[in-house]
Length: 375
Ligand code: GTP
Ligand code: MN
Ligand code: MN
Image 1 (spheres, helix red, strand yellow):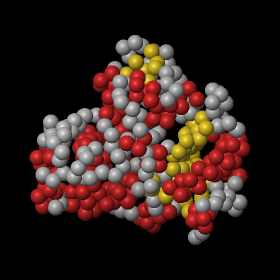
Image 2: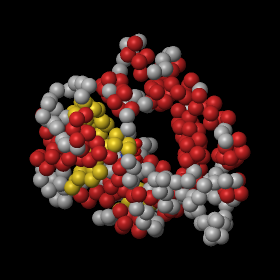
Image 3: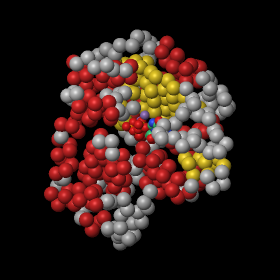
Image 4: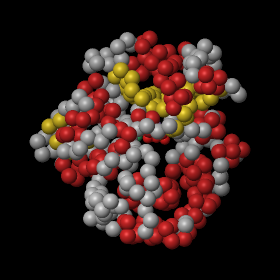
């Protein structure tokens, strides 16, 4: 095993969910490069390749020191030939030609710009690029057919490109709390996603809502949305109903790892003055976003109390950490983990949990706190 500066052994476990990955680490100069290649693989619909680069980057994030030579990488897991080649070139020449030419390529930049529009996925962006479109402006200029989400995405494009600050997240938390408390007292509301992991900025703000009395949470989302709409807070919203059914013979195999909670993808309107002073102002109604206004993506999820621990774990991220948890459960434990439940295929039963700690224990994993799930 590799020795660090003090001669102590670094034992790098191979699943990201077995490791502590802090937000700030020592190898951004390498991980940013590998993540460009990961993103490019995603744009080319090559998920396997993308995950391989993300796993490699994630290992470097967990290292307690800056990589100085290829020697430092001996005995580390998840570093394939391709990742090693890229790292070697960066260590020797300061940059990788493959990474730089990818970064500069017209295809990559257009994919980045178009998938950066809320409501636009890789398939759609790819079709538009083959039709000669490159930017969100091109979509407007050529009068492309857009669905409701994409229309909002184009309309608020530059606002949604701006990172959401923690102060703005707190402000939105206050608004969501006001909404939830006025439609159903006694709820629990939790800030999820990157902000729960300690990030200072995010691309959106994620919330998980539950009520300690099982069943009370049914139909809650539509009431919250009505309240927010009356207050003129919403620029866009799309709500999906809860479609989760617990099957006695274990969870159905599903192609996507999307969960089935009652949820809402939305765009909130904040008044810029309010987001500066930190006080919520929701008096003005209407759906326009004028110059004194800020548009922020918000995800709301409602979970039954019995699934709250699983939902909490599932919505904290990072995406790679979640993916690795599910892979660990399946490959090492013959279990199926989702944001709803954990199913043990050897015992043919659902393992219940009230807390995240209990879920890690069921999985035979050491508990990793949210701030160290930045894989
Ligand atoms: P930023 O928003 O960019 O700061 O990062 P983030 O980590 O908060 O990402 P995001 O808001 O996209 O997702 C937050 C967490 O929710 C991640 O761990 C995702 O894996 C998870 N998540 C998002 N959508 C779904 C979904 O449909 N199902 C499940 N189970 N999890 C989801
Ligand atoms: Mn988020
Ligand atoms: Mn989100």
